[in-house]
Length: 262
Length: 210
Image (cartoon, rainbow over all chains, first blue to last red; front, side, top):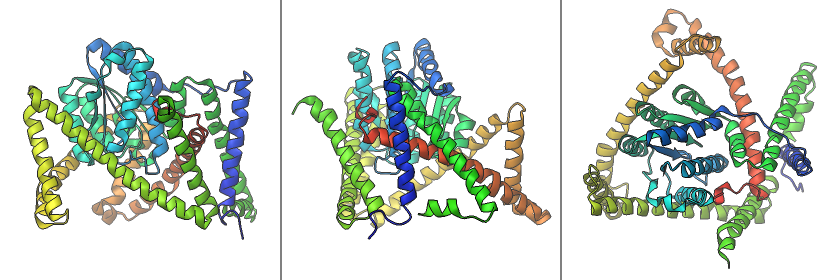
């Protein structure tokens, strides 16, 4: 009897290899050899968004996703990344005394977002500025959620918007609402089908894996950033595997395919 | 138990244990683990529903506060919101969500409103596309040509004039588009793996409130 199910051995080996690589990079970082990752324009722009809101006396709206922002779905890692970026934004808001309104479509993420923002205010010693009523569950369906956020953008002088996480088409609607209200906007998703929508509507955007890298960058934790650089090495290895696989296939060998199906 | 244990350590331990069970379920398929993971999946659905309830309670509380304070330009919307919420809830409980009255209300109130919003979305996509096409560069030209090819492939009149549009559009969808998407997908998957490992090892604590 196989310990590992057939067809999943190669995947497990690749996962173990990534884990070993991450641990190696972490140990190197602990020894003082930090790996850096490139700057991401959208992450740098968050300070601009909050700063502009402070100058204009407006508010910042943040959301971690729409219909896919459920912790029980496959996009949970995107929610975790979005929470880290939201925490960074909330810290900037606390520092610059800009009110932040956070909305969500699912009640299950309400305590997470609430706690994240509250902790950010606490870290900046501005807990007295934290307003619980600014963390809002708006609606359980996508278009009702859009309508609710539209009202917030219109009536509460939102001049900055941060929409990162697992987004569906609500991101385009909210982005356009925000643009009409004159908000400076940062968007980001790792959902491939929505990337063109973000590129078209947002001032700054995080595409695909930038969402995860951005989450590590905003933490400022050099150990975490070093382990994230494992993404780059793994990508190079994936490209190598693709090229070797293509060349071997041309010679009639099915070695790489057989390994991946192992 | 100390506050720190309840707020940080306990959720972290739960995350690690659950993730390990799911991991073992996927890779080993051992019957004991599979049964356990199915039970946990059912729990997650129940917990998620309780989470929704939490959201509804928060929504009622915020709107009740607006009503109580008579917030200018807001309180009458709160009345509408609460009335609609309780009306749907009462009818749903009395007749179930598949009942005739509930369905009538849903199909004649919610569906048309959602359709209207969907219509607006179409316009916003066009506006977004138009703005993306402002200014000329090689990228914009490639974007524009791809868009035209796909539009011509999907428009019946274009393919009736020249069937070759189907091949050009199909090629763009299947070759450059799919290649780019797979490239992004590989990057996204690697990013998710790294973040998941950091979460599993207790190094990523953003979800615990930083």
